[in-house]
Image (cartoon, rainbow, N blue to C red; front, side, top):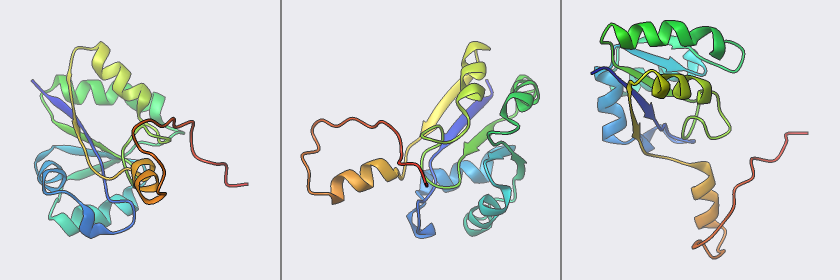
Length: 138
């Protein structure tokens, strides 16, 4: 069964990419990327010559049909954001919901998370916390 991998990427230092994330990017048929230019840098770094497809807030809805078609054809796909874990204040939620609804397999590949990095560096109790989103830029 074809799989959509939700792959976490480094949040500032490319050396933080996990071996599992790198291996996944090397073997999938396509990488769905928030910004193909930034993802190409990471893909080249880990030796992934995989085809990149843009998937961002402005085209997510129109990409769903193609993504379901690729999975239906047996292609494995990776979903990445510019930095960190996809879907956390990043596009991809509608795609993942459609993939799950269509009965395809979804596998997370954990890694860097800006939320957890900030929490553990803050010196605050980390047993319980609530994330309500990132602060607005303006």
